Length: 261
Image 1 (cartoon, rainbow, N blue to C red):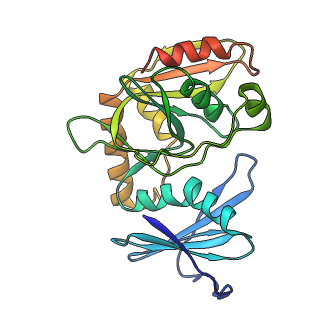
Image 2 (tube, rainbow, N blue to C red):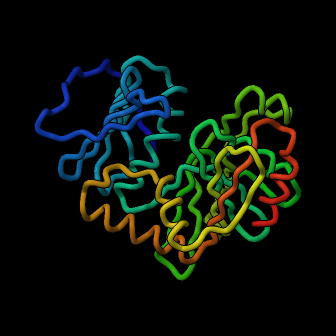
Image 3 (cartoon, rainbow, N blue to C red):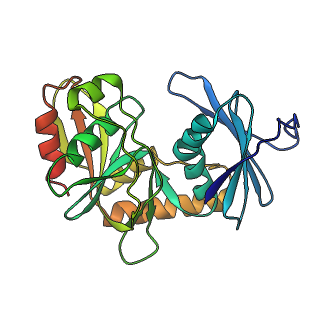
């Protein structure tokens, strides 16, 4: 899907009160966006930024700016809107960063601020590894295997991480292509470095917690999402990784991740 940004001023059309809105909140509880659907039409309203809309079967997302520049709108589209738009079209997307290694793509799932972008960038600096995604990893489980689907992205590192690695901004490679999804790693901060493979039941619950879902109250979409995540966790190893804050043990963490893919 492609993004089209309107240049006209906001229309000021209020949301239809008859259409229920889904509310997405940031980790601190603040409202990040509202979503709604009416038939084949879908909208995602980000207060103070823009309203994005798209249609089933269409190939573009239209942005109506409120008070934001082109770079902010493009960033919101890539990080938040595109994953939701793809979900309404039946493609599943994990909230994850990813690196492509010799055996396929490793998806690193975590809450914002945990370090998934930092670790993905660190792993991509090792031989035979390259950045594949930042914040959104789409996957297709409809075939005999599970494949990762490339999406446009720009790497976002926090200042401390950029300083540690001497990093610069990184964008998606121009020739991104589908690749086998080799492993999913669900990450959390903890006092010790601990890694283990999850059981099938644990893997399904853990992976689903990191799913981009436009509206799980819609019964057909809820059932399809659950089925796809069951297929994902039945075919792809899912690991839990807990690690302490700071950079002292980054090398050990990257060694563990490298061994997965």
